[in-house]
Amino acid sequence: MIRVLIADDQGLVRAGLTALLGAAPDIEVVGAAADGDQAVAMAKDLQPDVACVDVRMPGRDGISVTRELCSPDAEHPIPVLILTTFAIDDYVFAALEAGASGFMLKDSEPEDIVAAARSVAAGNGTLDGSLTRSVIREFARRRQTQPVTVADGSDLLSPRELDILLLLAQGMSNEDIARELVLEVSTVKSHVSRMLPKIGVRSRLQAVVWAYQHRVVEVDR
Image (tube, rainbow, N blue to C red):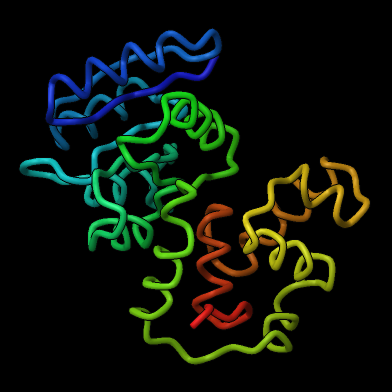
């Protein structure tokens, strides 16, 4: 059973998400917080598998919540799925840097939000399809980093890991990558698990951003 905490300052949204996620046979909503401070306190007490966090809340916002729950110093880091009303928003990029594992628009299809919670709980991360290209392009543009070539990337990653990273950047799932490279899904997962710490990230989503940010994959102009 996937244990989910919901954090949103709008009561109607909290109720809707609670009903939506709670109706899934494999998901249990263990708490619903009305602000960021309450979200952090409940998360530490309840230790959910996923925290679905509104990016904009009064007081402590979703970025601060994400930073605390996903901190490498946290005794038990909790994956965060950011929910936002805006397709492009400064908060989204800051939350990504803070360690969020996924982003979904609040007006996404209900089944997509449920699937996103499952994906984040499984450690895969997720990004709303309408956000993917714009978020990654804008994030890469904003970050002022030393360009890194594919050759430089291969200094950090094995050839197979680099292959997988490039396919991740195309939005492929583990199953898609396994079919493309003629591998077992379990093998793909193992490669991803070894790859993440090598490039200093904590999720597949951050690995994709790293690839664009360091120009291992070029952003379309």
